Image (cartoon, rainbow, N blue to C red; front, side, top):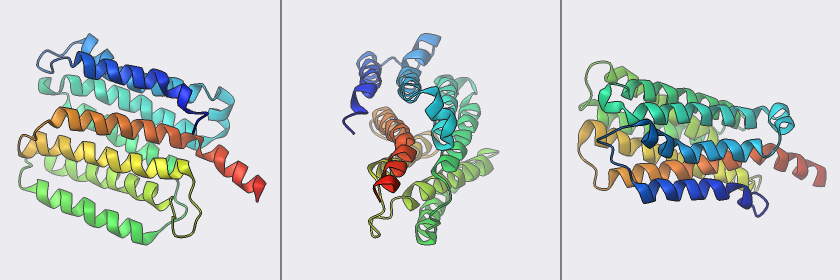
Length: 230
């Protein structure tokens, strides 16, 4: 963890810039889009700092980088969500969750975690359903299914009971849960009712989630070291 910390300093600084400037959402601009996306750009740099060879040889790391790229595009679209780009942002983040799920992999399967995540996702959609109309009735259902699947794959990798977890797997798990909190807050605020301090909750959990998922990209290296010690 200590070796990765210095590489994240630009991310923390960019996040502070976002919260200090706190640009109004009522007047979207390319500058506000840049400030919002800047922490995600810094996470690109964080992964690239591990070397192109690392990204090329470890598919999970390259898929997380690709997910961060789509996330930045989605962030930019959501700056102009009042101008009709909310669905575009939704699509970008849906692709992000597919890439993250692929990065986390399908082993171990852990059907119990999958069932639990399915119950949570279904419950969230059941609550939102009465507030949805038009294409959002189906789009939100697909999106919740994708982020729920991503959460399942992140949770399944931890295996605390079997003592097979690593700090990077735990990082992916916590990051996925925070991502779900962020997106649920967006959904409640967008479709149901105003959530107090919604913007702060959404962005704080979102940036934390992306940082933790980016940290999990070094997971493959940890696993190789563990196998060598074994």
